[in-house]
Length: 609
Image (cartoon, rainbow, N blue to C red; front, side, top):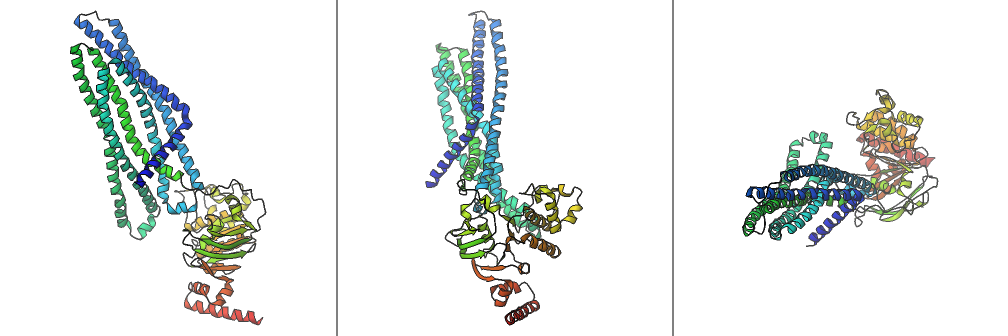
């Protein structure tokens, strides 16, 4: 019961949202209403004139009066002209409404795109990227594609329906009642069909989102699927989504498609009743044959808007599911606004203080429990530990990709919560484990976020990371387009990411497994470049390959969200604790013994000195 109420509330809210989008195009809607009135007048005047023509011809045949051929011919000509007028007006109305629907689609996509920028990071972890993509692309397209039809059907249908009913009652009350009673019976059936089809369309939309997510994941990682011979299993998994999708689509389209045949049967049944009642009234002398003929046309005209409304119900059922999904995404909780925060104009020295930090993706399950650390300007802090220890989480808190559950983080004595996210992130360059390269020129990728960077700086960064030779082999050099036709290795993408950080030239640096995709020879060159990048900057380096962080000022050893050890490489090796085990696990037994004896002799010489 509660779910039904929530579903009804969501439906009303999503419709209200759609009305708000449509209300931005009031002038186009008003013009379409006026054109609908003209179209309705043309539709209704046609059967009236045909009735008069029929009465004039029958009157001449029966000898009651001479057939006025001139008047009859003029009425026939007017009927033909009315069809041209209706065609022209309908096309103009259609053009206006298509403009409204495409504009609404554009505005929805724009709002969804802006919404994505305002959502916290946990939204992207909770939701599959394929499903999010389906909402932004597929669902908005469904709404836009169907919106013009609905508005046209509803506006034209309601106006024509009212006009037909008025004219029918003015012409003959009894025949009008015959049409209305039979039409109401059909309308009740269509409402039942609409309610059933809506539930099927909602199910179909949900399955479609899952299908998009599955396809994106498997196609973008097809090399992994092939490497593990997972093709047959993938076929079964795909069938497990595809078959229910086919069934849901069949049910939705079949049930939704019952509206039109029900409406057609209602119109046919009404016409039979008009003939039966009309013949009796002609015999009684209370109406003419022309009136009955006109009423059959009125009934067809009445069937038109009823059919349109029936189609609208089916379309709304289809569109409603997509509309709800768009509404749900637009209603997602956003990051807290920061308009009241003053711009941070102070110079960044790079002093960072973690003061009793507590954090958990679930507030009741903390993964960082009570972390404190003072980082001096220009220091290099290495963060190591087993998978899941909280290494990346720590730098994500510094970047405010997540907000702390307790404690505070200060940069140069200022609580990062008191400055905007934009000002904070202007202080830090990041190089992530998974390099990101987008469709664009090589230069655009290198200067992402720093479009005004001088070419001298770009060239220095390219040389520093070892990309200069490769770029010189390209026909268009830095203007080479990266994309599907220009395949880069994972290592080359990482080189671009590191060069991008060097070009950005920010006071602090975060390197999250920055050399994980680089071969050993290139790694040495890039390590030298990163050492230059970190000179004079506060740097946070997350590393699994512990040989790359031996020169760090402080090494934090994390385990289960807690710092279990911290100190320099030599001090931690000499201690022989958890870091010692991690470090030596990456070497063979002979190297381990050499390292241990070396560290012991080193510690003795230090104590001796």
